[in-house]
Image 1 (spheres, helix red, strand yellow):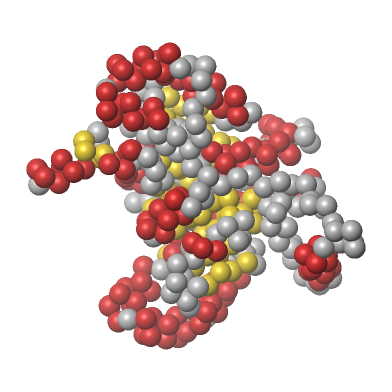
Image 2 (cartoon, one colour):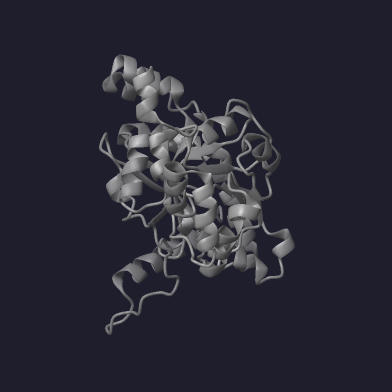
Length: 364
């Protein structure tokens, strides 16, 4: 899984500062001398890097139709013909805006700080489409300076080079590829209705098993039932669960939260995290909380639903993004206006509403 970046700079070679540090110093000076005083991107090795695809950042449904129905050449021409027309916001747009809000607060508290969110546009679009993407980003005043446009090839191979902490895409195959490469990733879905979200606080909600934690306990539920699962969790209450694909992203959020706590801003922190799990608190909740404690991580709110639908509760939380490994939870969330992201990891991918997908296919 993605690892938290070491924020301590590597020691410089004996001959002086490394070439990379010299390049960074020059880039910093260039941004500092801009008349617009536009904030400069943080150093990649200290930033929390979020890679988003163009179809998650912007609503490109119409453009996608052109590509599918008329082919690549017409698609590129269409994008060039509409370069001055900003693309509409997509599913990840509110999340990206919230990341920028956190960055603004961090820069106020730490003017020279480098521990910030860094957003990278990661797309297999051709470079000819880049002008419309740039125009759209500037139209909405988004601070996205790093692009990766791969001209039809999968961008997944570049994720580690960009030191990515989280990758968001509409393409489930690419997300699966990223997960298999050990990178936190999720497939984003547009909610069925719009919901007003906080403009001052980033809210991130996580499922537990197969998202923050491994699927080891979920395997027991699926293969042996709830009674065996409850007994297993009681016996292993003091044994931490193994980490899941999104654990390191929660860890990265926690490190930024602590920067606010250090300035006595805990009650005014612009990042809030939620655990929204189908587990029962009394029967299987202790192991989850003890696992988080053993990792040295805090979660702001822990909500144990004991199998109840997650959608209504998420409707009250109004997160900028909700991560879950099971599609029926994603569907229930987006029906009620929650921006949901599917994490294709673990045994849950073989089931739908508790039934093996293979068995459902045979019956149909």
